[in-house]
Image (cartoon, rainbow, N blue to C red; front, side, top):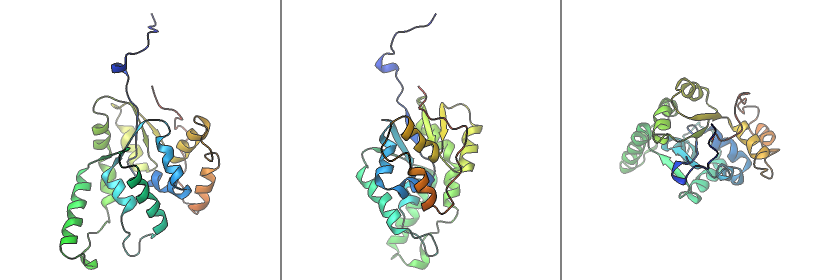
Amino acid sequence: MIDDQEPAAEDERRSRILIPDTSPLSLLAMVGSDALDWLFVPNADVWIPDMVKAEATRVPDPGDDQRNEHRATLTKWFQRNANRIHIVETHEGLEYSKAMQAWELAGSKPELKPSWKGRGEKSVLQVLDVVETVLEDGEAAVVLVDDNKARIAIQLENEFDIDLMGTESFITWMHEKFKVPNAENAWAAIKIAAGGNAPVGAENDPIFLRK
């Protein structure tokens, strides 16, 4: 027998969008701050690990891709939406924050600046801890991720109610489901801006939020 009764408010689960690597934010920022705001369109909670925020907004080291205007867009977006974004603490993020505070207290000498090398990779390895933290109440989530290592790690863990979605799929979702203006041509613009380095979307990505 099928129960057609509507679920009570306390039985409903709030969906969440988790972004465990910087790629989706960086790609959307290539279109502009309006594209970053698309993350709020599904009316789902947006969760971002502290290391992802740090990597997206940090002052680049010499030799890094500078993209100052690009990083400024992301920094302003985080500031403007501080009350709408849930920042998830990770061990790597806390250690990096301590290292930066110690460096600043020591006079911020360039030669002593904590290296970013390897920190992004370590934070990716913590993605399952982040997923578990976000979904500890058994809630559903879309994990917006392009990084292959993170995707494999999440796919190997099947106890969570999640759907993986790459940035290209997310933009398609915005266009087809929510009819967001300018979303139709956004991925083509990103591919041009990325100079051929845009990630290839996965064919089996869902274009929906699981109920």
